Length: 323
Ligand code: F6P
Image 1 (tube, helix red, strand yellow):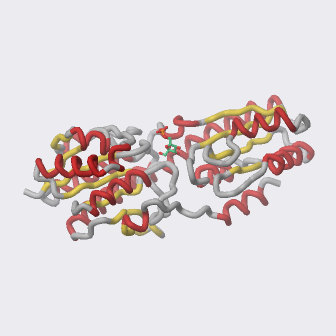
Image 2: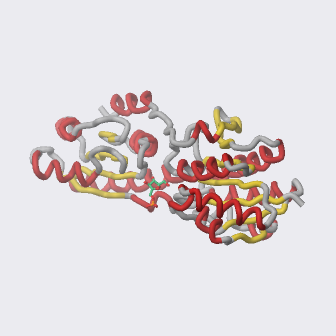
Image 3: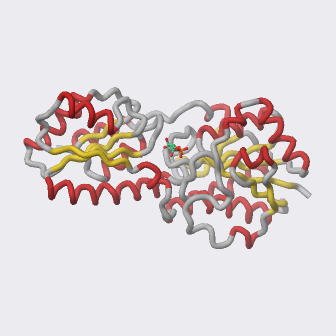
C-alpha cells in the first residue's frame, strides 16, 4: 500500500489543523495510508509517527495551533539529521511527505527532496513571507488578532492622549505590519525592508499631534532595524517633545494563537488537498500556494532562502492615508 506522512513545522499558524485534516482525508480517499508525525522534523528524527484515520482529524479545524505539534529543528540542517529522517520514513515504507510550514520548514523539505524523497510543501506561516503564494495559511487570522488589539489600544490611547509603539511579528518581512497598520489606521508603519530612521518616526508622531489627533499608533515589525523597544529608548534619550506620551505594546505570540477564520480554514483545506493531488500526479519538490485565486505550485528550490518582496504600493498608500 502506498504511504504518505504529514508534519507541521516551525511557528504554528491558525489553519494548520485544517491542512492536516485535508491531507489525511484526501490521502485516505486516494488509497494512501496516512501517518501523522508529532513535533515536526524533530519528531520525525525521533520516530514519533502514528497512523491517522478519518476520525482522528475530526473536530480539529476550528482549533488554532496544530494537533500534531510543531518544533524548530536545527538538526534538519545537518546531514545526520536528514539521513535519520529518511531512515525513519523508509523503515515504515513511507514514500511521500507533506510539510506544512514556512521558509525554514520548506528548507528541510527541499533537503529531503534532494535526497530522493517525494515531498510537497504547504505554505503556512503567519508572516506571509513565502515566495510562490499570495497568502500563507495563518496570516489572515493573525492580522485579525493584531487588528483587534490595535483597535483596543486606540481606545485607551485616545483617552490619555498617548501614542503606542505596537510590535507585531515578522522576522524578515513587513507584511503583517503593513496590512495591520493600514487596516488599523496607524500613523506610521516600520518594516524590516525599509530603513526608517527614528527621526522620521518622530516627525510623523509630532505631525499627528499638531494635526489634532488624539492618539498615535506606530506599528513596528519585530525585524525592523529599530524595533518597538529601540524606538521607545531612542525617544526617551533624544526626543522629549513628541506631544504624545509614548508606550510600548508587543503583541508577540498572541498573534499566533487565534481561532482560524473562514479564509484560513478554506485556504488550508484547498492547499492540503492540493498537496495530495500533486503527490498523485508525481509532481514532487514543490510548494503549493494560492496565486490569483488559483492553487499553484512553485519548485522548492526557488522558494527556499528567498523572501517575498514588500508591497511598496501598500506602504505608499499607508503614508498618504495617515493624514
Ligand atoms: O512563525 C513565524 C514567527 O511567528 C515569526 O514571525 C517570529 O519571528 C517567530 O515565528 C517566532 O518564533 P518562536 O515562536 O520560535 O519564538
